[in-house]
Image (cartoon, rainbow, N blue to C red; front, side):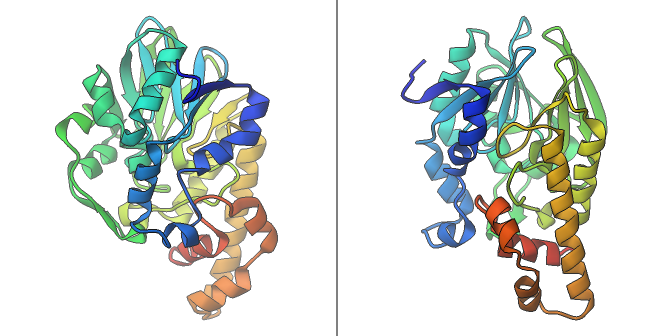
Length: 318
C-alpha cells in the first residue's frame, strides 16, 4: 500500500479529520460555482488527487473516505463486498486502499442510491469482478439521461458495465462472508432510490445519503427527493438503531444514534420555520433572511450545502 495516498486512521482521528478529508471534494456552493464547471465536474476533477483514508470498525467492516460518499467494505471468503463506489477519478487511491486491507478480490458492490458520487466507480469495479446490486430506481436513473436541476447538469446514460445487474423493489437479504446483510428501501427520501445496508452481526448500519453527519444534506427533487421524505428517512434511522449501533453516513464521520437524532431534529426545526414563513406568504428571499440561524450555519453549513442553500431546498418542498 502506498502510504502517501492511503492511510490507516484510528476512530478518534477519523472523527476529527473525516469531514475535512471528504470535504476536499465538496466545496461550499459560493466557492464551488465561482470555479469553472459545475459541482459534478469540479468534484470529479478533484477526485484524482483525493487522499483515501481507511477506518477499521468491527466485525471485519472498514470504511474508506475521501472520494464521494463513504464506502463500506466487508472482506472474507466470498470476496470483498463494497457499499458504494466513490468517484471514478479516485480509482487508483480506492484500489490501493482495498489492496491494503487484504488480497481478496471485489465480488459484490451495493449502491445506496443512484447519484454519481456513490456510483461513479461502478464500471471499473464491475470490470474487476463485482456484481452490482441496487434498488430498481438506481438502475432506472443510471440507464437513461437524468437531469439534476439544482446542479444544472444532465447525466448521460451509464455504460452497460456500470448498471446494477441485480435489483430489488423493497428489501433484500444477502448472506455473504458469514454474515447477514439487510438491504432496505426507504421510499423516496433524498432521491427515490435510497436504501440502507445493515451488517446485522456487527450492528453496523450504512445509511447512504439519508444521513449527512454534521452537514446540511442535498435533496434531489429532480429524481423524487423531498424534505418530507428526507425527514421520514431520518426518523426511520433513529427508530432502527440502538445505542450500540455504529452508523456510517453518506457523508461525514462515522457516528451513532445521537448524531442521527441531532440530524433529524435539525431537519424538523428548519422545515417548521420555513413552512410557517411560506404560509405567511413570504418570498424565497424573505424566508432565507428570516430563517437564517448563525448557530445552525456554524454547525451544519461547512460542507457542500450552506444554510441559505439548504433553506432554499426546504422552501421548494413545503
